[in-house]
Image (cartoon, rainbow, N blue to C red):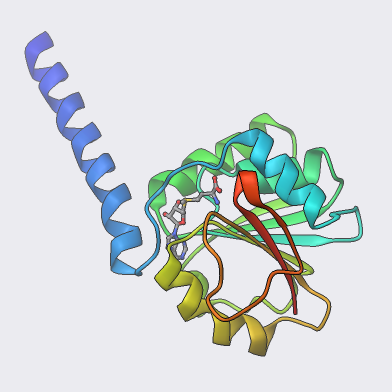
Length: 173
Ligand SMILES: C[S@@+](CC[C@H](N)C(=O)[O-])C[C@H]1O[C@@H](n2cnc3c(N)ncnc32)[C@H](O)[C@@H]1O
């Protein structure tokens, strides 16, 4: 009996892990890799996030960026995530941190959702995804919206500020 339960548990874990890798590939985004928390803090500081901001994280993973934006910087924050497992996990993290009033995790593909309400957009995706996002960001975001990218640049755009040793790049629409 114990062996059967263990086998079932391992199968469920493999399926969840497989789905987590599959979803981002289907929508041509980056699979889950968390941004180190100290880097998240630097990103939000670089974008000068305040309580007047609405921070939107494109591919919000376990919710660490949106939770910190709300908890430490007082902003309203929205995470968009496609992976069902990360959505459950991040919603639980939001609750655990008592941030339900300020933070929302939206299930979906960020290419299909309207981003016009954002005043700050955070991105940790692949270089190709960043490039595919450029047209959407320029057409939907209001002038003055800050975009902070971790690791990858947006090719052809010049960041107005950068923290090179942490690979953080700030752009303004
Ligand atoms: C590199 S992780 C970054 C997670 C989080 N933003 C952080 O910095 O810790 C990328 C995340 O984007 C999600 N993702 C990839 N493509 C997506 C898409 N088109 N729409 C929504 N989420 C996407 C993945 O499931 C993954 O959780």
